[in-house]
Image 1 (cartoon, helix red, strand yellow):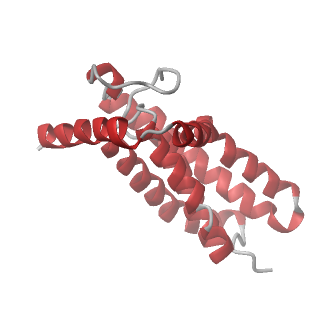
Image 2 (spheres, rainbow, N blue to C red):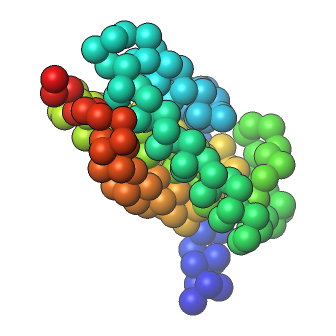
Image 3 (cartoon, helix red, strand yellow):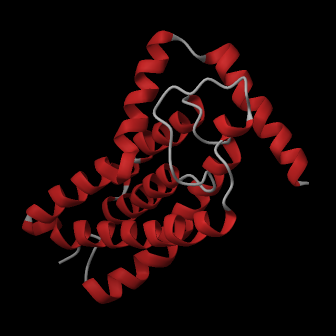
Length: 182
């Protein structure tokens, strides 16, 4: 089963490289990949929410969930699985960004983006659900630029969502109202 997933992952990456990459799309995908580096976009948004008194608890909750995601994804799962990056395995794959030093599985960019998108949706409703647009573009960018397999990205999206599902009620209980109620 793992060899079938690996073969499909390889084929998708090479298909993207050979059939979808364009100069304009490459610029866009590099930008979104950069926005996901170290969760910078989500940390900035969380800090922005903390600055305003009416959204302070929601910002703290989002950043708290992001910290849990980082610990689970980067400090535990990546170190247990140790999947090599695709550009180390697929000789024909052209890397469009700098080499990464961490393992490939799961995608931390995808996990951090999806935990934050989930939390924002739960806390801000339809307005918060717009966070899934940049979250999805960040996740897809990781395949496009050649630093993650599609299965890494899907696992990161699922992990981020799962952590959000678990953390939202816990943070709501311990931080107080994070859904905008008084």
